[in-house]
Amino acid sequence: KASGSQGCAPCKAAMSSEQPATVVPAAEAPKPAAEEAKPQQHQQQKGQRQPKQPKQPKQPKQPKQAKPAVEKKEKASEDDIDPTAYLENRTKQLKDLQEAGKLNPWPHKWEVTVSLPEFITKYGHLQNAESSPDVVSVAGRIMSKRSAGSSLVFMDLHGESVKIQVLANKHAYPSAEDFSTVMGVLRRGDVIGARGSPSRSKTGELSIVPTEVKLLSPCLHMLPKAHFGLTDQEIRYRQRYLDFITNQENRKNFFLRSKIIKYVRNYLDTRGFLEVETPILNTIPGGATAKPFVTFHNELKMNMYMRIAPELYLKELVVGGIDRVYELGRLFRNEGIDLTHNPEFTTCEFYMAYADYNDLIKMTEDMLSGMIKEVTGGYVVEYQGQKIDFTPPFKRISMVKGLEDALHVQLPRPLESEECRELLLKLCKEKDIKCPPPLTTARLLDKLVGEFVEPQCMQPTFLMDHPQLMSPLAKYHRSEPGLTERFELFVCCRELANAYTELNNPFKQRELFMDQVKAKAQGDDEQWVDETFLTALEHGLPPTGGWGLGIDRLAMFLANTANIKEVILFPTMKPMEQKAEEKKEGEVAKPATDAKPAEAKPSEAKSQ
Image (cartoon, rainbow, N blue to C red; front, side):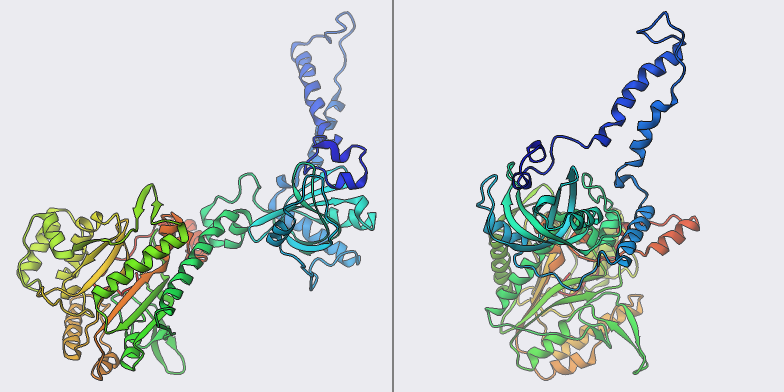
């Protein structure tokens, strides 16, 4: 590896390895000092003369022996400097050079003729110690910088998830002074441009030997040490840019997420669906049972709510004659934060006229199995040590029957009766299942199903035929009184999709909305009646199937992560100022990632 810096011609030096074996003498000087200090210290402790001259008088102390250690301290790596001092030193250095007219740290433009991935593709054929006559211009971020004397500098240049080497040789540079100035100012983390010839070093590193290197944007802060990277999760989520700079592998989750969204969009587009956008600010938070975020409209002088679901708007479009419609976008719910919940999340909802939930089951199996195969190459994926098989058809469990089988009971009919509610309450007490008030039949059912039925859904499973009292927007079951034609898809015991045959009877819909208002009177303040939607139903909604998919949850499965923050670029976090204030006041405040989520609601929107 040292061949590139020991008497070779400049061109040969330019194609040497990244790090010569020889080290700068100043870095080696402290080592003999440490070795010499040991016998000296031994002499002082024992009070003896030097071993080689036992008959001569005791030699006096020689404090100058410590001098090399001081030199080592002065030449300490910048990685050991305090981050605040590093920022101050770097700022002063750049300011001085800028004022002297020697450097513009933030130029307007750098012409890139080839990207780093293209560079690797085009010049990857070069053999060891081979160069190309081409002259190209590249750009990227320095992630490693090391020197071999004053004439040779090696830099790892990263960009677009790949890297090449910049092999800067003073003898290949037009001006030795410019070379020294530029190389002296460059630091790890800086964004630079390099113009020169492609080559491959003797040790096989694909490189560019530049005749010009230009600082495009300096990194004023000290990056985490390359060996350890950035491991603090709080910093990773709060400073995603720093996470991506130092942990480039973490970018892959978001490329995967993009593939998921593209696949869903393409699947629906090719089947005649129209993508639309519906309002995020609503006068009534309809379409789901969830606590909304509230804001105030100054001009209208009224409260408005960030949408918790786009469902009602999309069904109004079906009434208007758009038979196949969908929306991919953000929803907002003012509820808890945990490993699987974030207050804002991405969903896809579609509505298809003249379809029912049986059609939607087939579409769900077809879409997800096809997506898994395209993204991973097969139907089986691994999630947290479990093999999950998306080969259709998926398993099916009827919700009420599944709960009765699990608890070995027969629930009284109708399910809306007080007798049924009392039995469910008794079962919760016997099984030590906590359910916050109001203790409605729907909430009790939802808690028990979550404890005893959902754990059976490790492999992709349709949990089907929900009770009507849990599904006010779903149409009644054709053969099972009191139930609806609804399903939820569970994978690894977590809900991934939700769909049903839509209720299109305006009179029945109003009746169910009124039942929800009664629940609101019992303390459930997340129930609303949307008169605009009811009026739309009175104009005639065709038989329709409605479907929703949680994009974040699906991305978690395919990325094999148990934390939703790993697939959301900028997750919601508690402000640092608030955390500092809580600590100052002596409060024991859990971080946002440990906060308990709001209780699951029995009539959530299609997309979770």
